Amino acid sequence: GLPAAGKTTEARRLAQEHGALRFTPDEWMIPLFGESEAGGKRDVLEGRLITVALDALRLGVSAVVDFGCWTRHERLALRSLAEQGGGAFESVYLEVDRATQLGRITERWERTPERTFPLTTDDLDRFREQFEVPEEDELQGFPAGAGRPPVPWDNWGAWAEDRWPSLGAGGGAAQADGIAVP
Image (cartoon, rainbow, N blue to C red; front, side, top):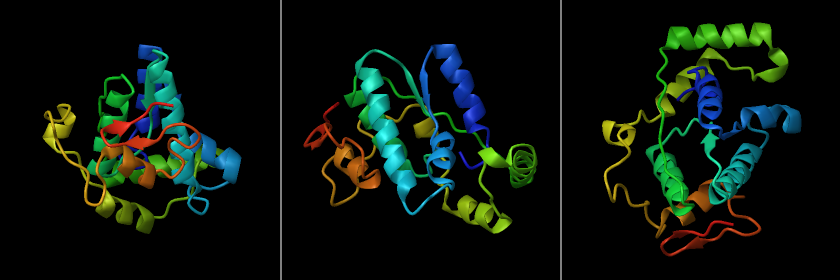
């Protein structure tokens, strides 16, 4: 979902309910870099969080990845990685209308500015245009064989390593049939 859709609140609930580790990039970005994107570091951080989540799956520990997952490709790649890592995958989509989103962002900024990022209405409108709303097949878990990675990638592991540059660094590497769990 989009910013202020309630992703982190839902991720906290799911983590508690399932005894899972929760991976929320926003909670790392401000302490580490002081901003949301920090010159591309968010993608690097997300790759490392995914790698640790895959390690958790390998150890039999559930993981909640609290990312926006704005594109179908991101969601398909994360599903493939989770399944290759021996886990199950469930996508939870949280819809939010613009007025509610603006209200939540304003409230968040007034209450805890040290734990949030400034967002303008132009940012939000741009984000709403960029976000690919999940289709019903995604919310039902994707049909078998859904979605091949786009050209030139042969598999979702390779696509994911390109999307999240630090994914698998130091151990996990894309293979012809998926991704090796570190």
